[in-house]
Image 1 (spheres, rainbow, N blue to C red):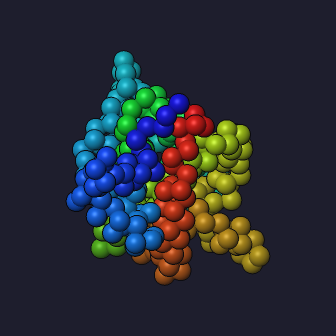
Image 2: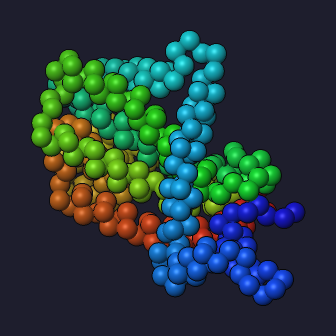
Length: 300
């Protein structure tokens, strides 16, 4: 089976010469060689070039996936919002009482945490199935795989928009108070968006190659949720027990976006860790994508 024209084969085709010895597409050939000389920039460009050239395509695909998944249901995509409402109310009644935290304070903390957690958990559980679920596109069309990656990330943006309806309701009820720090939620989610692209790329490749990895991560999700301050507040852990969340990278991602939603500034340590993680993830993820994406078609 011939691999579809993706990132790896696309570069090969662009560098291929015509029978008379000249490059097939001179302008694109020079551009490709220029990117190859840049090293890391060339790998990063493989994840950015096609989606930025056709930005409407992954967004439309993401919206179509959301609509089709809720086809013929009464509330449609608003089930996403209702699920968060029901979960927040139930957990607030139980854990708010167990932890002796005021109902309004705990509801705000839990709702904001779950808004971010839903994005993070999707990266760990669903992102890896991006190529597997779209195998017919990968095997039978020349669509660039980065389009599918961006489609998944855009889908999380749409889910976030539905979750923010709950956040707006909490603000309207006076449970959450808007401050100047709330505006920091915008760059926080932009960083989360940027981080999600290489994570989705790596997870999609790994899930395509190692099918048991999805089940392994699924079995660990409850543990990750329990050791991440979602249901409990970080201040409840002291001493060596605080290492449960201080050594947990998921905590920093959640807190990075949750703090602005609660009208608070994220701690400098949290900001530094998240930005460092984003840089490292992009360097490693982009290189892995450019190296292994061309083999995905043989693993599906």
